[in-house]
Length: 448
Image 1: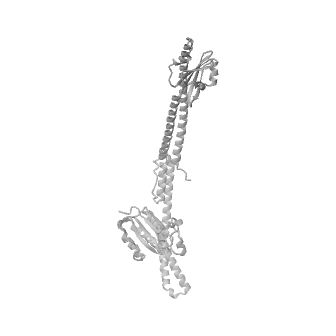
Image 2: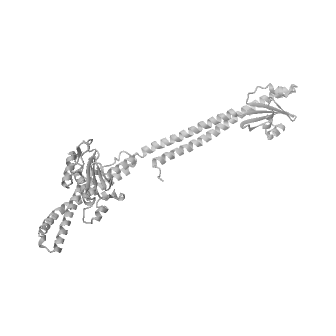
Image 3: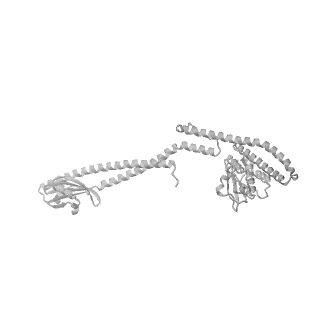
């Protein structure tokens, strides 16, 4: 399972932290508000119960024996029920004669003992408050106050606080994303510089003044890039110097061997075979030196110029004596003039054709498209597991190994890759429809 990125993890942490904090604040606020509202509602209900109880007591004291009439004189709303327990009988104002069942037994016992009190209950699933006020030794006034509106208010408050908590969490995630985006920007610059160096731009450097907190990282990165550039430059100079120094003695040796080779008929069979082997190895050595010199020069910037790509394809075909029909005509929608380094492109294409001749059973098609070149061969193809590594230096595919270690230098495809990268492009190999391999060079921005 792929691990989430740093920005995602930090944003999630901000969101979780904001949600936890807002949830705590929400719970505390809700409980405090709920307690305050209930206390105030209970105080109001108790005061109203005492006031109503005083009216009932006055009515009973005036000699009115009809308790229902006394209760009917009270000014109460639909959310209040009044009861009187007198001499073991219950009197109610409305037809709800079962209302006394909602009065807790404990509250009745306390009120019968002459002590006033109040208790919360749930009546028909709705919260309510029962207030008990003793009137006489055998009479107790009860008032049941429904808290339905208060419960609805608390539900609305809970929804509002929950929505606020969610919005705070979303805001925390947005803040985390924004903060990490700016905090990781210097690291993104480092990553971009590293990609540039990996892509061949060895002049890429970081500005130490952009982010003072990362000055040490920036300095270390620039120092590493400098050392890498110097190391690569030394390696290229060494390869170029060695190759250049080898060319003169190689030419002398080749000239001397050619003299002996012309007199091969005068030699015995073993000597003639030895001369043939020496001639072949000297030719391969010269090819290797030439390839090393080309690789040593590959770090130089490309010299783009207007090039007739059709003529370039014709030159490659003539140099390798390709049969008619192998080089395909340029499509109508592709301009014939490209702005590329003609020498590099021609050598890269020649190397692909030579690779097809040596290891691919010969080229069957050489074509140009919109900023790309392709060479198809008639070989057995390139295994998928080596389609990337085959463009590394001194890497030889199965076809080259089958033909023996003396065939080729192992640098031809590496030179193709270097020239493609120098143009900001790439080289790839895939299966050709119908069998064989298809090598493709992409050259971005080739059109003038």
